[in-house]
Length: 253
Image (cartoon, rainbow, N blue to C red; front, side):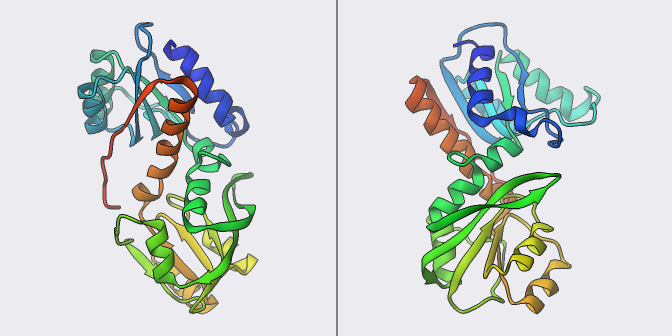
């Protein structure tokens, strides 16, 4: 497959058109290669220089990320932005980015993947942002403690940056929005959920969580968004036979 063909494959699967009006990311194929066929695809959260250099070292022909290089505002091609683009072009690596489409997808999305990990059932869309619903909510078949929930979220025993255990001792319901979703906490409070799972929250949300009796697990912006790219890589491998590799460049944030 060429970069353009593979880009269209991702566009169709992730339904990028649904998010075009409100997503600040320039979702889709952001950088082409010289037309050479794609045989190995690297997946990562961020299109940072380290990720690009490691994709090149891994022999990737395309890099697929959640946070790409191009957003709503035009950025000058200077400094770090220049170095990232130059590294892609020098290595002849195409770049594909999927921001909100990869958060919201019902099968390979960040939030669907997190919901799978914790065992949410009777799921419903949750988390309205700029007119788009990007998260998921539901209930547990058997109520769980916050400690059990953390172990399900992070089976590798990673400790979330922030746990505010202000909800019931046993949690029956939860809402999930990965990444930086502080303000979606208020939607979870209004809907009466026992727990809100996200990547990061702000200082002022502490008191709102405590006074409304809701548990908040902020697992890290980066860590909660490694889920979708890995699910997408597995889907690509199954359906196309292309070789894939995940590049982990954690920020601990």
